[in-house]
Amino acid sequence: MLRNTRCLVVGLDEDGRVAELNCPWGDCEVDALRVGEPLPESLVAVLAAVPPERAEQHFPFIYLDETTVVDVYVLGPAAERKLILRDVSEAHQAELKFQQKAYEVSLLSEKQAELNRRLEDQRAELERANQAKSRFIASMSHEFRTPITSIMGYADRMSRGPVANGSPAAIQRASWHLLTLVENLLEQARQGEGAVHLNSGPIDLERLLQDLGELFSHQAQGKGLELVVAPAPPGAALENDELRLRQALINLLGNAIRYTRDGRIALDLRITGERLEFAVSDTGPGIDEADRERIFKPFERLDPGEQTGAGLGLSITRQVVAAMGGELELESSPGQGSTFRFSLALAAPESVENPNRLGGLRALLVEDDPDVLAIHELYLADFGLAVDSASSLAEGLERIGQREYDIVLADLFLDSDSGADLLQAVRAAQPACKTLLCSGAGTYADWQLHFGDCADDFLLKPVQPENLKAALDRILSHNP
Image (cartoon, rainbow, N blue to C red; front, side, top):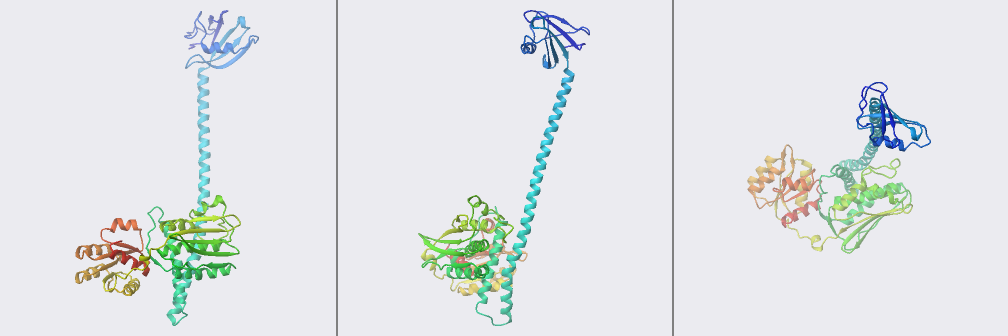
């Protein structure tokens, strides 16, 4: 806009039009400024901003067009004003670049500060996770060793000779407790891998409640707490997964004793309509409204520094209760204790009084662990079955080629072979034979997807006799 010059003097007439243009340092060409023409809008705005009585004023960085920037000096009173325009385009561009660079540096600084905040948050989260891991390992070490000590102690005494009649029951209680701890860990590890699988069968409520009372009586007495386990209501009968029910009640009773310092712990049962309600109540500190969802998250505890436990119990219990067809509810007030309750559908009378369909049938049992094979043979014999056994895929295939069977039960993992291959062979050779697949790993959805064409039903180890009999009854009645 201003060429070969640094300044341009603009004289104005009485109408504010350009009266003269003077370039003190040489010739210039001014496209936006011509004698007799109105001033550009930017300069008109500059003049409008100068008070009439003001004789001199400076306006920096005024755009004459998109590329030319000038400093404007307004001189003289309103009737005799002149404008001196000094080309500062290069300086202004340098200033803009500086400001842009400063803005970019500011953004980088903000991003760096945000990154530092995130890194600090992650460091704090990792520290909390590391502390939780340390607490978890210490807690699990204690919780696992307690039932293991009981099992090993009573087993050792029994191996030495006659012992008190309560020893087998104590071993069984400790085994259930240990299995609950294992299932808590497995359920947490299986998050997102499918629904909880149930091994349903008739539940001996009297035995279950007696076991729970004896399991927690010493813990309650050690803290000076009263523990009351109510008997089952008359006529109450359940057909569900006993392991899962024990798991839920052990978790709830264990939490109640852990967090209650004095007073009473109670497990009450009552029939409501066609359901049996379980309620575990305590006289502990209670739970604030704001914490009622947080306590159901894995590894969350209200006072992690004071209490033992892995922080999995309530999270797992909610899932297990839902899988059994119930809903875990909480009633609590700070200082008034807490009550956790859920209800399960009562068993239909005909499902409780199930006729024995197994007497006289012949079964093939294939299991590579000799101890498991021996106990499962005893279960099947107690059901009235004639049992042949095999400890490998090859031996099982040989048995199938020699005799017809009504039922074949196989472990999924047979050393380096698969029990599913055996059941496929049964399907081909003896189509009328019922098949049952057992495993210590996986979920029902996985089994159904991969082995549903060769197995009529599935059982998760350890297999309880009630669940085994219920599964056999289901497949024999064509209702897996």
